[in-house]
Length: 143
Image (cartoon, rainbow, N blue to C red; front, side):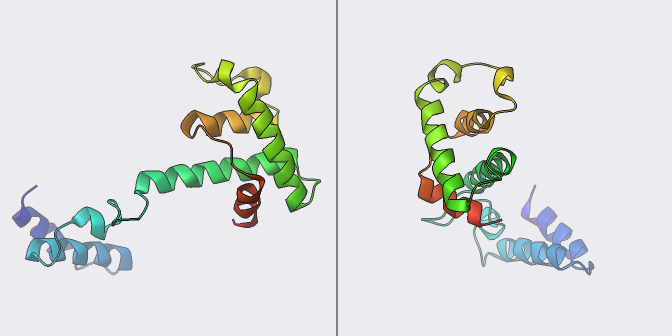
């Protein structure tokens, strides 16, 4: 898409009453005018130096949600600290025992569907590490 086409889109968007649409239009106009060189950066699609990429942020959010769901489904009767400790121990045990055999399987292991290891498997398919109990506690404390 050319700069002229972007400018035309931005001018049409300026008629909107939606704040997000207006912010997008302003970002496009800043790039078209030369005040900004990267629409990706303005939209948060390309990280500034030292910042996480959008892809990384999405992966972390997905991991955190899987951890919260696993905690709620399997450790709901424990305190937050006990939950984090138990999850860390179970996750580490899974990572050291079954994970090396299951890491290359194309499908989710059906014998683990109703177990905490199912959540650990899903997390480790994209992020091959085990979080500390402290990190798990921090994640579980946020929503």
